[in-house]
Image (tube, helix red, strand yellow):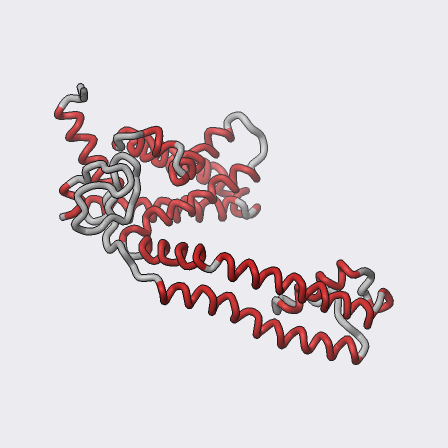
Length: 279
């Protein structure tokens, strides 16, 4: 039996709608402020990594970081207390990202060195994906994920074919050029084939003989053809998939998003969806 007082239940519902619902004015404002805070905190981290700027503004960056850390900590705690199943949120992917985005400053009090703290702070960028529910980005992301999942076998076959091709081309180049021209082994030659066929072209190894240059020209042309193949595979699957969800409504229990506009219950756990979220 739920012993929660009506006032506290109302407070939790209001907090939940603001934090997890993007189709209300308060929810949109919250998400906009969150995006600005994430981008500003990441920008501060990047600027702080520049020695000249850090030497002059180190104290200011420390204050700014603690302001963002306290803000993100309060937001994280608000998310925990506003959902009906806090454990599921805490151990969900985005819940762990939210937690990691608040830890660097606290860890810095006990651990020396800042490189790892910088890396953890940049995890805040992942939180942008949560806020992209403001529009149809979540739906489009789901379509892309479905297309990639449907194409995984074709992409795997394509990858195996490319690996076979670069091994053959690398071996041929090793036989043509040899160690005297920098192709000291078959693995090094395969590395050259990968760099060339992907059109990266570092230039650290290059053929010097006419036969080697002719083979390199063929590999370069193949690279442009091969790049288009995975794009076509995924594109076909995208055309086959049709969107099934047109509005972001987050379940207060399991946090599943992307329900139908007229949905009354969560399609995963059966929890009743809040009426205000569908208005």
